[in-house]
Image 1: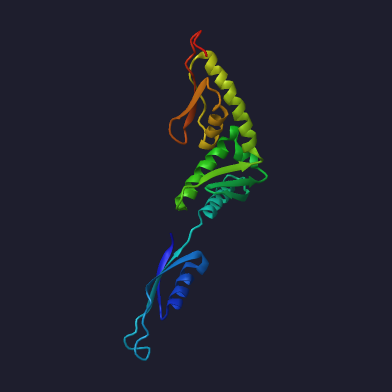
Image 2 (image 1 turned 135 degrees about the vertical axis):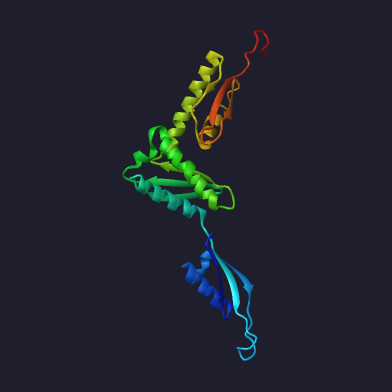
Length: 214
């Protein structure tokens, strides 16, 4: 966080000096008055300057947007970023001429960018925010694919009687798998590993013995 301590004959002058040093405006800062100062006798004898500490308020969402613009430019695929916030979830929608490059195979590049953006946004936020990156409606299309994959692999687990491990996925995609199979009482799902390599395991339930069904 950028901050300076400044002095002036009045609090207003001290704040003005600090804003000039920080090259910002008062609405983007947090001002703390350390000493209101004292004019003194005839404005000279016994006078004491006002002292303030001014800190720049950093917007975590804007920092994340700035990160995305900078990193995509370096990748040779510059984008425009639209932001949609819903509580603690922040959606960044990317558009650009080379968007396919940023999505990557099975969304791996997009997921990596999403993970890095989440690290950036929570570095500056005082509350944990969840980041979702989307481009060309990829997330909705990916969700449909994941739901189909979940049901197919659940059948595989039941048929083989063995656990089936999926490829590593971000928490957003793992939630899709968990939800898709939540009503299937014949299998259970759980996550294993550590981020960003955390993955889902689909485990077949214990077979019901013949004649024991109610």
